[in-house]
Image: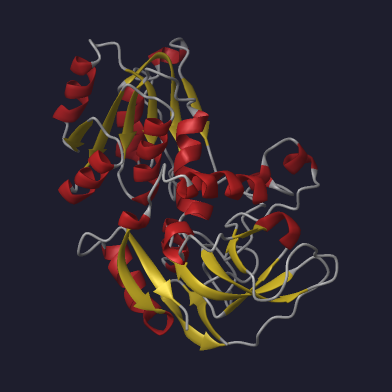
Length: 347
């Protein structure tokens, strides 16, 4: 089979690898559609360490090719959404509801991290019973591909706030995850959502996803948010980019007693401004989230698509075949041509 293989920082390519075989409790899925996530870009840049020879990627839709022993209520030929996070469902972290931390810190993120991932013609799914969701015939691959990672993560940012009815919310960074955080805040009843980004195109999409105020990322935007909230600040500030500037800005506009919900992936040290933190006395909370995983989470998000409460297809701005995925990575890493997410089609 063809697979996107990491070799070293800046070195990766589509290579030939054997089709995997399923073990007990596992499934082999023939991938039909995959995509590139922000963490994948961190990996190919060498900013997040993985072993050489690993197939990368963690977001995919496909058709069940083969089932291992112990997997029931599924059958070959069935179209499925693959969970980007693949918890076992049985460990202490899973039973406590922290599926992304299955087996240890970030342990639920296996695909394209600790085991071969989805940017390939076939992928082996561990704990398949807990991590595959049948896709209704009424929904296309493109309608559901972003549920397992981007939407789940962005919505988790709003949920971790937690955003409440009537809240003021600021979302810093309107990439795919930030846009889903904006959409999540809208779904949860925020009264006013300030979307901040340096890209006017992304701000246009943010408006479509529920933002009431769209602001270019300039120093004056902080003053605008504070003035609009009568100098109190926002109830929830969401940091969705993973850099010092957006983290500091999110903390600066957060009201006393508010929550900074962070879903950025940080590749360097982040410092905390003492004044913005209220000298430790302002009762501000900082919380982090990794994409929630598991079948139950995916089923809930599928319902939102089925009921037409959400439509994520505007995020799929570009299309590539698997054999051209290196070009797709270059487009995404350079953020050219107003790219948000690429749909990578596997033949």
